[in-house]
Image (cartoon, rainbow, N blue to C red; front, side, top):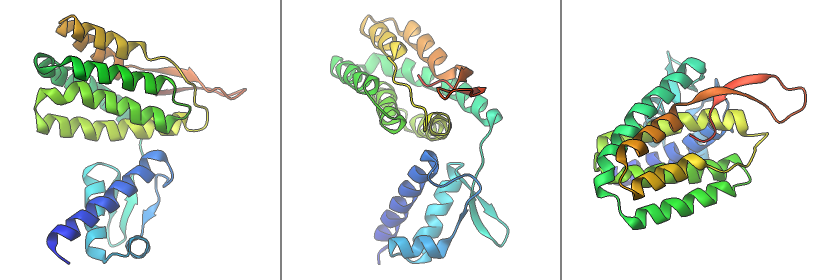
Length: 222
């Protein structure tokens, strides 16, 4: 097996495990067993180990002394940190992206927003939401910044899935439309300020379930 094929398999394993962790299919605190995952993917321990290290870089797994890896927990302190970082970094990326924005990108962003508005589950909504943010930020042409933002989106998705997996509420994303309109009019600072507020908001909501407690959670319009 060539180095290239090992890297490709490691990336595939990391991608699939990331999806399972983010969606909550693999719960926080779960040990990641090399032998079980190697058997599932028909792989040696080398690409599995590389995949675990990638999960560690993303903050989704942590090493245990002499015991392999486990899925990390997450809490409100991390939630606040992620929200503040996204607020600062995404507005920075959008400020640099705005001069390179095209009507084609804005039209696609509108279509993706409509797709999110009609999503009937959090997984489809999160995919549309992430697509929207990538569309409007990618023209910044700052790959290191974009990679950092991608990592923050993964962290955000964990909170979203944890809070909304069982009681999804469809809603219209007015902030996305406001950002698009500001960009179309050349109002870059307004677009950046709207985006910064949009992704940085943390509040309290009550679950749709009866008699549920009000909980602090990540704003669904992020």
